[in-house]
Each structure stands twice: as C-alpha cells, then as structure tokens.
Image (cartoon, rainbow, N blue to C red):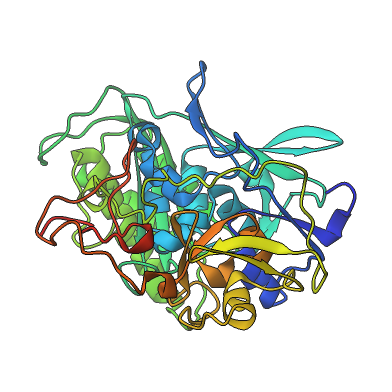
Length: 437
C-alpha cells in the first residue's frame, strides 16, 4: 500500500470491490490479496471484555462464532442476513464496513455495539469511532496507505440486549430497504420469555438506522426517550416515532421515502418490544433469535470456512501478463497464462472451456457461477482469477460422475466440525441434506 498509494486496494472477499471496479465506482491498478495471511480471520474476546474481529473474518465465520452469538448477537444476525452462503463464504465484515454503503447491514449492527476500527499503515496506527470513520455515501477516513486491521467492540454484558432487524424486497439475498439495530442496557438483567407486565428500566440506549440517510445514523432523540425510563408500550411507541423522525430517506427504484420512514417506525417498535420481552417479536421481519438458525447452511463442507494458506513468497500476477496461474480443476492440474486480469469465471469458461459455470448477473446476485474452491462454495464471478493460484477447484463438470448419495433426504443432516456450521452439499458430489425433513 505504501508503494502503490491510491492506485492500490486491499482485496479479501471482493464481493463488493469487484462490482465497484467493474462499474468504475472505485479505481485501482493494483489489488493486494490478504486472504492467505494467517491469523487475520479470528474472532476473540480479550481480558478487558472487548471482542476483536479480524480483517478477513467472513460473514459465515461470524455466523458460526459462538462468541458473537452470545456476546455480539446484532453482528451475528446482520451477517446472517448478508447475501447467500457463497457470498458469505468470501465476503468479509471489514470489507462490508469499508464499502460504506448506507444500506450495508454490518455497519448498522456494529455502530449500535459502539464498535471502533483500527487502521494501520507504515506510518503508524490509529483507532477511530464509526462517527469519525464514515464521512458520506461510500466515503470513509481510510487513507490510501491504510488497512483495517481490527474491529473492536465491548462484549454484551448480562444486563444488555441487542438486536438487528432488516426489511428487504425478499426474505434473503436482498439489499436493505431499511435496517435498524438497537442495544439496550438495563438496570438489572431482564427476564426472558412471555410479555406484558415486565417493563425493565433502561439506563443506556443505542439505536442505529441504515438505508435512510447518506450514512448509517443514530437516533439520539429516540435513545434519550428510553434512557432512565421503564420500557413500556408507551415509551416504545414514542421512541419508534422519534426514530422515524430522525430518518432522512430518499425515493429510489426499490422504495419511496415515506414508506421507508414508516418502516423505520415499525422496525424500531418491533425491535424494542423484542428486547423487552426476550422474544422474537418480529411478526415476519427479522428481529431476533427465532430468525437465527442453530445449524445454518454454510456450504463449506469440512473446512470450517477457512481457506488454506499459501506457502512461499508473494505471488504477483499482471493483467494479461505471462505469470502462470497454476491450480487443480476437477482433479486435473492446469496452468493458465495471460489471465491475471480476469475473474475465475472467465478463466474457467474462456481458458479452460468449462462452460457449465454460467454468468447470470456478474455481481453475485444469482449463484449461476458457483464453484467449489478448496472445498468452499464461492461465486466465480467475484473471485479474481489469480486467487485460484494454488487452489483446488471443482466445477459442475467435476460433478458429472456423482457418487451414490450417502445420506437419504430424510436422514440425519450433516454438520461441520466445531462452531455453529450447518450441513450442505460436500465437494466432489457428496450430497447431504441441509436440514431434516
């Protein structure tokens, strides 16, 4: 980054960056892939009660984290609502933050959790709050020579509850029309289950709203209405009204401003009710734990969602350069030259003639380009071809000779080792049910 300055960009998942480059939203002549650097994909709790999320932690790794499910639930739920398993297997939390779209789900969740970002360069290190980091639509304080190296936030304590809620045009794989997150600190640990006569006293509140302003915003008037008061129906309704007043949405092709503002009211009311009662309370909208599966489909087989490291020196590939991309595709060793500027999808189709992998959208919306990379399902249209160097790729052609299905569809579902990973189709034609019928 210090060498190339503004011409360089860090790439990890690339699920946002490659689309932005294709649309000329961002400019870059050099992409620096950090996904094979060890130790950057960890979620940990330190001795001071702070949770650290590494820069290459993917959305699926966040979903699978027991620590986040227990002490950082709004982030885990927001990551679950991002894209599809293929997108979540590559897309990172840090990348979602850096893209800085006001509709990005993890920004809303982490802002409510009072998160900070550590930025590092050869010049030194600094830590910024979200209010200081975000400067406008897709604009941040990240300097061209800096990298986000840590995402830090206080772990939720027993007297705190937090939730994330989102409304899209469909239940999954949708950009938020509106999203919201709330973290409440109560005078004492609230009880769970049921509803009605419990109205715990709120001593601190954080409410954040996404897709209703140039950046994700807080709703300070709504927060103030809750603090020092009982969380009863009247107070919840008042806070929801104030949150709607804080929103400044626009009309676009997906929704009108008036509709978005009303949905802020609805989502905040349901979120606060769920936090009070310790129940889902969503009535069809994602609000609480009822929408967070205990065994989510990861499509990462037995890998636990972590790609192998690449031993040896840094590998450089140039656009149309002679540097070879060497990998295994459907069990055969292949060497491709001149594909440094392509996507993995283009390499497979144009250089190897494997046309079973399709381009349906070229932006990660359809799944037609799904392949297995080192045992993990990814979207080939969002993987730079050089990232395939040293990997094992399986395309649909590699599944032509399917082995007999080892588990009947009514049988016991598979699960990945460790964490919260769910079952799915294994690499090389091993088909297993995602959930019992």
